[in-house]
Image (cartoon, rainbow, N blue to C red; front, top):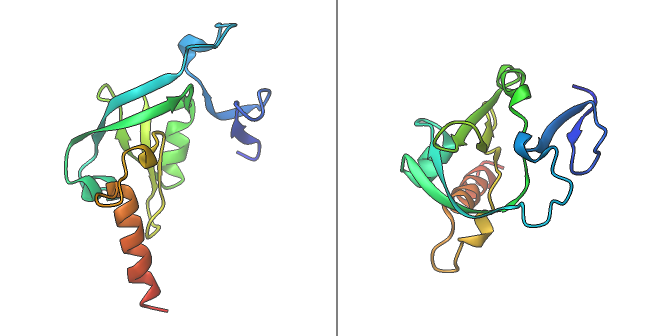
Length: 138
């Protein structure tokens, strides 16, 4: 997908991998339409996200109106992406991982909103842990 882009950045992209939710496409005044607050995320067992949280369902905070465009889901899976966290109904992608990478984990939510100095957010904690482990091999 040579022209893949986010519709938030390039509205006329022919391949909007990140796009408005379908129900927001015809909304002219987007004020007050953010996906805002704490939402559940269902994790797939055997993924890095599941290992980080050690739980099937977690709750994370959101502040956005653009989402992964499911039209591209199959193509992205065929390219090696793993959709490791979704909304409980499976409709919204919350976490994506790159299958053969030591730690490529991206989230739709804001993990920094729930991280604390004495209780780091699980994705941050495991990212730092993997970084330290790999730095020892250098």
